[in-house]
Image (cartoon, rainbow, N blue to C red):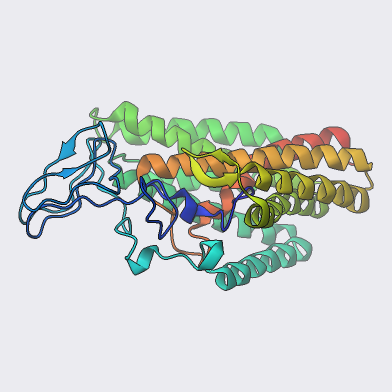
Length: 370
C-alpha cells in the first residue's frame, strides 16, 4: 500500500527499471539494442539507461561507467549478472503496457472498485461472524504467500509451499482460541517442518532456500497471526476496523497530498515518486482518523487514538517501502495481477502487515479490553 505518493504513487512508480510506467526521462529508459533481432541488453546492475548508443551490430552501452553488454544477432534479452533479465513490460516508453492511466499511474476506476469490494468483504464478514473474517484473512494471506514463493522461484530460490500454507493457517486461526502461546508454538513447529522439508531435497542451496523459507514464514505468515489476537476480544471487530482504517487513511491521505503537493522525493532509489508532502498528508489523515476511531469505537481518549495514528503512518510507509525493495531485488513490478488497479494480494497486504503488530500492541496497552 502506498501512503506517500506523488501523482499515482502505487507500484507502477516502484518500477524496477528506475522510473514510472511510461517514463522516457533520461536515466529511466531501458533499451540498448544491437544487431538484427538483438534483444534488450542490460547493464551489470540489470538496469538499462536511456541515451545509450544504438550502433547496429555493436554492443549497447549500459549504465554509464558500469560497462557494456553484448548484443548479437538472434540473441534474446540479455540478463544481468544476477541471472535476471529485465522484468516483463520494461521496454521503451512507447510500449502500451507501460503507459500509465493519467496522473494516477494506475487504472483508478478499477482500483476504487476493487478497494470498495475488499472493504465490503471485510466489514460484512467482520460483523457477521468472526470465523468468516478469519477465512477472508486466511485466503488473502494464502494468496500472498503463493505470490511471494512464485516470485522467489523465478529468482532461483526454492521455498516449499505446502508446509508454509499449513503453518500460516495454524498461525492465522489457532491464536483466536489459543492466544499468543499458540501463535509462538505454531511458528516454532512451522520453522522445524520447513527446515526438515527442504533437507530432504538435498544439500545444494539449502542455506539459501531455508533462509528464504524463514523469511516467508515471518513475512507474511507470522505477522498475519496477530489478526486473531486483535479480533478475539468482545470488541475485536471494532479493533480490527481501527487497524484497517488507520492503514487506509495513510494510503488515501498520502495519495491525494502527493498528487496535489508532492515535490520533494522521500526515497528516490527505492520508490521514486514518494514525497515528503505525501507523507505529511498520510500523517494528518492517520492522526485525525485514529483519534476519531479510537474515541468513538473503543471509547478511548483522543490522544490515544492520535498515538495509534502516528504509529500507523510510520509503519504503513515502511511496509510499502519494504515491499518495493523486495520487488526491486527480484526484478518485478507487481507481485501479481489478481486485483485490477492494485496488483497482487501482497501489493495490498504490505502496509497492513507492518501496521498490524504495533496497532495491536498499542491498543492492548492504551485501550485495554473492559
